[in-house]
Image 1 (spheres, helix red, strand yellow):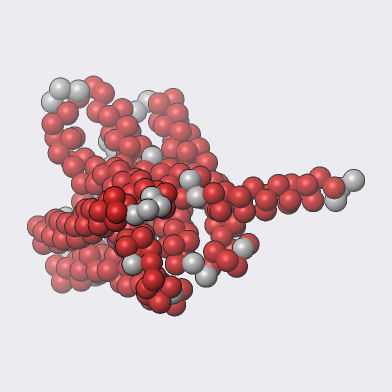
Image 2 (spheres, helix red, strand yellow):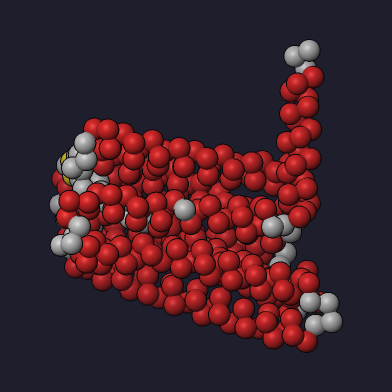
Length: 305
């Protein structure tokens, strides 16, 4: 997750950027909140591993947006932040960021099993196994951050965590060991996720060509492709430091605007795809959401009268 901003904006520009970021964050979290309420309002969703994985991705996105927007605003509100508080925010942001691609891989595997091994889907993708898988995701997502904390404890004095620093990952975890840990974890995790996505897509494509009824297989292909697009957007955050290095000599006077656009593209906008992939395309989910919120709006209108 990248929320680095060089604070040289005018008051009006800084205010406008923060309003845009906070507004988009609230809108996305409001939409995602509706999806979460719909999920927990209908027991049938909690018995389906597909929807369990999806709602976990949505909840993870909600957490990530909250943390990301908080870190973004801190760059304007407070130049220096307590290192311990910064560490908590950065670690939580890093963990939720790492979980997103792993969750996408899990959803692709579930669709692969449903299409290519339909007779075994009910036995393999049970709710209990899905929750165990989600626990493993959090463990895998936290490995990089735990390693960063251990490196800091070994290389930094304890007083460092009581000091005040600029709350950026590069200031909190500045050593070469931290950079190597970040690079290694990103390469390993992203390679694994891409292998899973490409393999599942090819297998689903092969199955769709042989299937008599191609509807569900074709829809699964589209879903996995959308996961790939979402993953590409998430991966853009890995190359943002290089983008800054390339663009700074040519657009020095507009660097903060470029940083702002890159932050929107890599941290905020990918979160819009989550509700679109299932929340809008899945007819069962859309139907239940409409029924639930329409019913509650009618009740709210009737009760006051």
